Structures are given as structure tokens and as C-alpha cells.
Image (cartoon, rainbow, N blue to C red; front, side):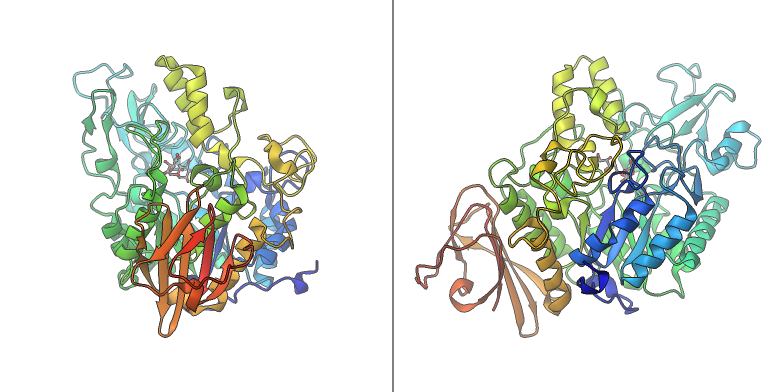
Length: 584
Ligand code: TEU
């Protein structure tokens, strides 16, 4: 299909808040499309798949890191912010991708990872070389805890636990000091208290914008300001570590840094998008970060809904998702940012398990639940983010051995838990349920062995269900997950009420945790979304609201109706995972 026949995506003009009508697609390049048969996705692979993105109708690509990196955390450990890693291609490849995307009306937002660098970044190599090096203070170096022997367990400067298991402090034999790493030891935290660090980052950001990129997704940007003194966290009985989050997140200078970044990097430029990833951010804080008058960020990624199934202690301990909890959480954020600020809307990304497996029913109602979840997400007030393969309904996979796992977070967790006595099978089951590799299996383009992702050996095995879940089998197929996403994106582009309208949840009778109904209103334009988010059929009546199935126009549904029995009643039977969109 030639690019001219493809649906041209929404023309993202220079209107300052163009992103309110835009849809963003996240490309995790390692797993998107391999062009040189090395089994690893690359920039030319993205270039070769732009037709897919244009056909889908997205407006922006969020490109996960392609910078030079030892790949300890698949590129979220950067050793040169201004070179492309050879595994992904060259800067010429990147420039060609950027130009080709722009020709198609698609913007590209880069992933900015500046809370930390790789330990192989020249800045850290210099900093580590000597306590007297001018870059020593570009990172967090501290002496052993007073009264302890440097290098021995318990002598770390504080009791914080890394997101990737173990202490957040790595001992450096040569200097007898420790350096801070909230993630892997190969990801030392930059010291943002140091203005030299901040201004080096801003200069690098300006050079990427001068190159033509259209903004940034800012990795864990709420961690760049830490509490002075780096105090110990509150310990729980079950752990030798304390909770460092109150002290390493949302420090006293975070808003100051973001406003400084806006002045130094974004002022005077238009047509850009900035989104800050903020694990643990609250609705109240998000209002401040995204209040346009404060000139900090356009939107944030919050984590409340993707933490609903986390048990105590860590994401790997499971808690059953309570019925209705997802709808309640999403509603809370819609209400909190209704007047000021702006929501990002997502269920998936490269860190989260596949939404249809986590929040849907991929065993019994795969297509229906994938499309129902897409419907209730995309028609809310906010900017939707599609993670690669989500538009195809890609699912989790199982892992029968830790040898099949590639993610540093899961591997560190496995080592830590098995060493603590957990069984191999229990830890693998948790990784299979919520591990990040679920999202990182290669995109399933067709039914062939490696899903059309590579002609080599994929770095991470392709999910065998590519035989039945793949792009080729869904293009132009009425009711397919892909075509449903296209229809949702078109609704956002064609109806201002979806981008700019208010949000109001509608209660149902009988009260049901399974049914999520909400109204979008702008002037005289009203759109109603009603979805049964369960695997059982439900009778639905909307409280104090005219039954849209009698008064409205069905704009989109995900279940073929056998034809109404003609009954024009206030109640309606919704099939399992049935979602409908009405214009009133
Ligand atoms: O993730 C930050 C973050 O919150 C992680 O704790 C993430 O939520 C967790 O891994 C989920 O289990 C960002 C990037 O998205 C992630 O890929 C990186 O590994 C991490 O920062 C360090 O850069």
C-alpha cells in the first residue's frame, strides 16, 4: 500500500497544545524490527515499518533509547548521549528516520535518561578515577557509614534498596568510597545538585532539538532531586533495607530543576511534547507538574493503575486485581486533572506486562478484552500512548527457565530471591506474570517462525502465538484489534469532544464493579462509553441517564450484535468484554 493511500495522521500543527488531539506510539527498537539479520531490532527496521504506523494513524513516535550503551539495561544505561549505538545503526540512519517520519506527518520524541548514566560514560570514568577529579561531584560519592569497615555488608552510606534488588550503593575499592545507583550498579546516579551536570544535560537536549526531534520522554525524572543528607529509609521487618523513596524521589528542588530546564531548553520553541515518567507521583503533584502556567512538563506517566496488582514489598509479590479497581483508579486521575494539568493515558509500555494478559482475559476473550481495554483508555481525557504490539493484542509469554530471561531487573530479582530460599518455579512464575520481558518479545508482524521480526535468531524468542496473533492477519479485517485501534484514533482526530471534552463517570444499576461507563461532553457534543470489563455477561442500566441504546447513535462497538430484539428498554445486556461508544 503506497504511503499516499494510507490514512494521513492527524496534522500535528504548531498549536501549543497539539498533543491533546495526538496519539503516541512507543517503539522499543530492540524488539520492533530487525533489518540486518543480527536478531536485534534497529533504526532501519523502524524506517521499514513506518507504513504500519501511518496506517494505524498515530501522530508521534516515542523512541526508546538508541544512544551508545553497554546495554546493561537495554539502552537505559547511556555511555554517549550524542552517538547512535552501532547495534541500532548510525546517526545517518536516525536522520533518515526523522526526515521520513516528518514527511508522513509523524513526530519523533526521544527517550531522555538523565537521572543516571552508564558507568562506562566518560563522565563517570573520570569521576571514578580519583576523589580529586573535577567530575567527582557529578555523581553521588559517599564514605562508608561511620563506625563500619568500608566494603563490608552494612557499611553502605544508607539503607536504600535498588529498584533492581540489593543496595543502591556500590563500593569502589580504589577510593574506599561508595557511589549511588538507584537502578543497576552499572547505572550511577548523576548529581543534579551540581549546576555543571544540569547545564551539560540542557546543552545536549538543545542539540537534539536543533537536530529536529520533537520532544522528550524523561526517564524517572522525579528522582533527579534527592533529599539532602540522603537519610535512611523506614525499615520493615522483612527486609534489611529501608524505604528510600521518600528521600530519593520528589526532592526539594525538583520543580526548580524542571522550570530551569524549561527556560534553558524549551522556551522559544513550539510543536514539542514533554512527558515525565514519575513512579509514585500523586494526582496532586501531577497537577503542579503539568499546569501549563508553571512551564514544567506537558504531562507525566503516573503509576497508580500499574501498581494495583503489586503485593507488599515488590511488584513480584502478587495481589489479585480487585474488580473495578482499574476503572476507579483511572477515574480518580481523570477527576484530579479535570481543570488543570493533563493526563497521559497508558496501560502498556516496555516495563509492564501485556495489558490484555494483565487486565483482560487473553485465554477466553482475547480479542474482546483487548479491544474493550483500548476503548475505555483511548476515549478518556488525555493523550493516549500505544506500546508496540498492543495494537495487535500481543500477550504475555511463559518462561520455563531463567536462561530464557534477558531483563536485568528480573535476573537480579531471580538471583536475590533464589539466594534467599525461594523456589525456582515460584520466582519464574512471578517473572512470567509481571516481568518486563513479557513486553519485550519481538513485534509479531506475520505468522512465520520469528513473526517477520528477523531472518536471524531473535535476541529474545518471539511468542509462539505469532502464528495467530500478528499484523498481517489483522489488516483490513473488520473487528480485528488493529482495526479497532485505527477506529479509536480516528474518533480522537475527528471529534473535538474526545480531546477537549469533560469527563464524568456514570453510575450503573445494579451497582457493578465490572461496568465502566463515562460521558465526554463539549458544548452540545456528547459521547458515551459503556464497557463490561468482565468475562461474564452483564445487564446494564445507567443511573439517571437516558439509555444510549435507545436514544443515541452507535459510533463503535467491539462485539457484533446479532441484531436487537427491538426492545427499547432502559436496560441492555452486554456480552463479556463488550464495549460500545455512542454519540448522543
Ligand atoms: O523505569 C523506571 C521505573 O519506574 C522502573 O522501576 C520500572 O517501573 C520498573 O522497572 C517496573 O518494573 C525507567 C525505564 O522505563 C526502565 O526501562 C529503566 O529500566 C529504568 O527507568 C532505569 O532507567
